[in-house]
Amino acid sequence: MDELLVALFGSDARAREGARLLAASHAEGSLSVYALAIIARAPNRVGLKVSQPVPRGKSAAAPAVAAAVGVLVSLLGGPVPAVLRTIRSGLVSTVSEIHRAGLNARFLEQISHDLQPGGAAIIAEVEEDQPSMLDTEIAILGGHAFRHHLEGTLAVVKIEHEVAVLRSEVEKLRAQLRGGQDNDTLKQLSRDRDLELQQARRRAGALAGALRREGLAKVDVLRAQMARLDGGTRTIIEQRATTVRASFEARASSLDQVAEHG
Image (tube, rainbow, N blue to C red; front, side, top):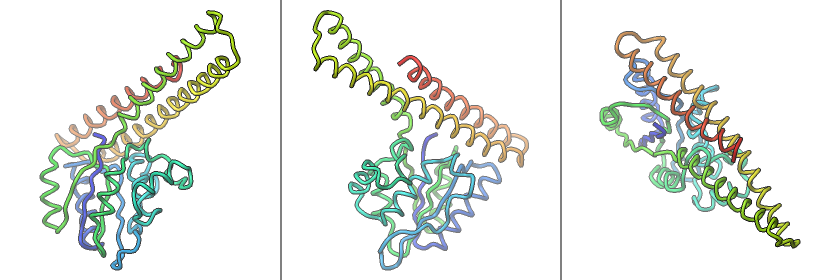
């Protein structure tokens, strides 16, 4: 699915009601909640706080939830461009994986802008078949729901493209050296590009490992959910687990090929 559900409420109390709604829906099998957190803005509009953190042991199943909360709270709802610059410079280590998590600036900015003083927001990764039904239930509680498509698949495509380009450049430089263009500048450039290629391949391998861990954690959540269900609802969750496992393994296997043969 690779989407985050965000539900904005006028108060922390209403957001907690929304969280209980999601928990009840998960228990009955109408949707699956991988992880959930609540953030709140103070009445004076200064800063954000974690009202309800991701439960211990749940962040592995939905790393984007923890990353989004970490960015928004660490930077106290500050300007998103500044947030991203800080992240890229490595000064906010708790959210250094924002791009791997598939988040983008517009999503963060929308939450920061729309969360009113005294209000609260649920940030959750939810697998659902009937989103309109959930939206209606959230609206009854006075909330507004929207969804953010995570860019995890694009991250895989991007690193595959990066490795392919670097490999091509390395091969061309090596061909020039074999062809007699033997000079120090060309040799150094070849070494630099080869180093970049090896680093990119290592990132591909690391991302493959991260995807497998997330996929396994998601399947664990779904197995625990289906253990409390029966009949057709249990079958739906079981099929969801099979689909999730296959999707994450396919992406990880593709990155394995890049890491090993890139």
